[in-house]
Amino acid sequence: MVSVTFRFYEELNDFLSSERRRQTFAYDCARAATVKHMIEALGVPHTEVELVLLNGESVDFSRPLHDGDRVAVYPRFEALDIGLLLKVRDHPLRELRFIADAHLGGLANLLRMCGFDTLYDNHYEDRQIAAIAAEQRRIVLSRDRELLKRRIVTHGCYLHALKPALQLHELFERLDLAGSARPFSRCLHCNLPLHEVAVEQARPRLPPRIAALYSRFFGCDACQRLYWEGSHWRSMRALLAPLLDDHPTDRGST
Image 1 (cartoon, rainbow, N blue to C red):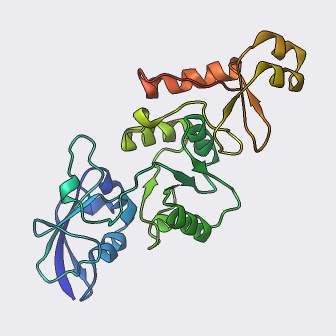
Image 2: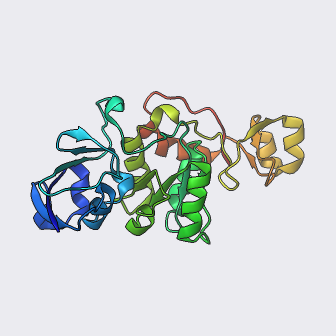
């Protein structure tokens, strides 16, 4: 066994046992244990970690630990650009795409409403979610720490909030999503981009009252649903307003 000193910062402390939070502590590790192995043994999913300093040097998850090592573990930095220091992941994501586990259907629906490509199926098993995330380079959203600890999951977010609206707010803050959101541009059911539908094509498919009241429609090629700026759209827009600040909403909804 080797003795290693750890210190976790900010919200990573939420994953630790109470006696280890917000302080430096020593922990006995197996010889040749890696940074990733020990971080997760202490309860922190590797997907929540943005930066690891080993004796003051930025290292990746595969670095083995030795007796007397000092490890500092940091979450995502909100206001500081540390790009040159990052070594824990080989390939940063260039596009924000998500896959939500079976318990986050409400959040998945809200993310689609914001225009984010979000896969969700309540029949997905954890192994399927991990495989899809790895193959399609998606961020896994979950409240299951064991799912986020899977080796092939490189990017993920543990949601602390329980209600979908609060989860959405949490995700917007953590990943700074406001500038990337394109509200009402994606089908809530199929997750595919919407396109504008000519009034003449839309009206025969709508109740007469709706066809008479509205003149702008958007459609999904997969499920053939139509969307318009009705009362549901206004309710959704009010929900998103605090998150989007001055970013415009530019698509209709049923």
